[in-house]
Length: 429
Image (cartoon, rainbow, N blue to C red; front, top):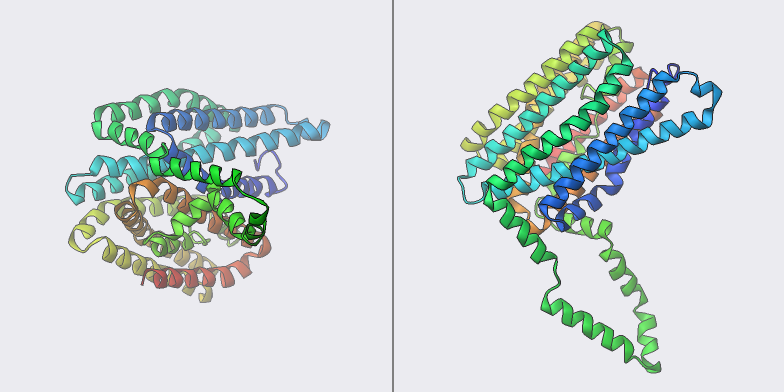
């Protein structure tokens, strides 16, 4: 997107905003849909929609890169391409969320039921390890293609990869589903759970009968109860009912604590990378720091099962968040280091070390939700949790737009991030 419009970060920022906003708005709805459909339906809808969306996005980027003059010759077509890329990316991210909820919030719990508690802990750690390894190597692969082939080849590879990988993904996931009977049994329970019970049918019949039997004398009570009926109808809407279910959970405070950590620029993301480049840090140094950060995150997935077995899920989470907070104090202290390069290296070191506590805390909160959220609410809670995290992530982008001066960001936003860390700890207690 930067190559398409070299003089502005607007397109890249807009894409990030659209992705975060789509998850924030539709995350609860996605969780509700995953809860309603059978595993096979969710699986097929997820893989086809996700890969098809990214294939369209990749193909559209290729078209923009091949026809470089379209922006000056026909701005309407150029704008249509940009909108198509953003919409396709948003749709792809939403269906990726559906798959994440299905596997990480549902399948993992079903597979580990009836087994030693340590099995669930190890499965969570392994899945997070796979996720972090992919996030470490995927940018490296795409970077090599961009550097040694071309940017167009990178976009084309994205489109082709999504065409080929959908078959591999479907085969692997179906082999898991067919190989573990508990998954098919749980899927059948979903079907029965979605059917109305006898009491619900009789309730609907009574409501229908009462509505037909209302006389003129009954209009006045109806007039007084209109507010209550509006509230009841609003609460039945999937979006609001999902939030209602989430707020009723015992683990709502740990969930909010985890979401608050997404309101940060201390993550080797776009804003922090821009601030480091502004301070004169070479790109390869930033790349090494990001790789180190990801490696420490992977180490956290090995350390978490050990600590969880010795302490408990809750105490491991508390230890982890305090560990992260301590490392981020170092980042805030870098503000007062007079040497700019020394401050930047101190900042990168603190952020990299904080990944150990961050990812263990993430695993601890997820496992609490898996253990304490009822089976019927698990997917819905997962959708709302991701929505809440996207809201805080989106807020970070908005603050980055409002406070665009790197010096102001360093002195103000970093301090705000530390305050959010303290708030997360308070939510846990």
